[in-house]
Amino acid sequence: MLRFEYMPSDFHPLFLFLGEAGDLAELAMLLRRFAEDPQTIAVAERIPGAVSRDALVLAPADDEFGMRDLGGRFAWKLTDWQAERIAERIELLTPEDNKSGSEIVEIGSDGEIPVKLSRGEFTDDFLITHR
Image (tube, rainbow, N blue to C red; front, side, top):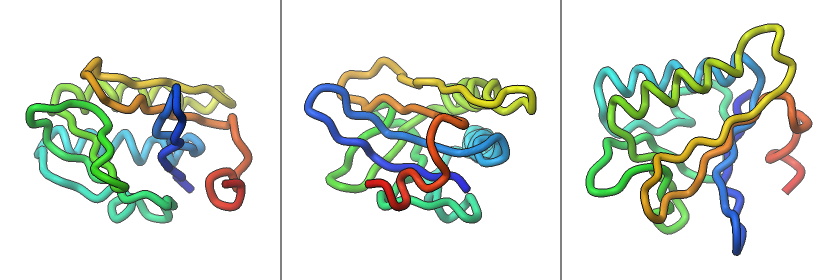
C-alpha cells in the first residue's frame, strides 16, 4: 500500500512517499499519465489502497514548481517533462532485486518541499499508526 504524508520540520520538512515496488510503480504510472494530459489529479483517488492524512493533488505547474503546501493540503506542481523525469527516477527503485532504496526529488524552485520516495526503509505501518 502506498503511504504518503507531509513531515513538518523547522529545518528540513519533506513530503514522504513509502511503499513497495508495486506501490511506487503505481505512482510512476500516475505521473506518466499526468505527463500525457496535465490536469489536476487527486493522488489518493487514483491509486487504489493509498493511505494519507494529507490531501495531495498533481497539478500543472503555473508560476511555481515542485511540492507546495496550500494551507494543509498539498499540490505537486509539475510540467509534463518534470513528471516524466520523476517517473523515471521512481522506476529505478522498483526492480525486484532492489530490496530497499530511496530518492529525494526537488525541482529547484524557491519554497518547494523536497519529496522523498522510499522503498523498504520503514515498517509497513509507518505513517499509519506511527505518527
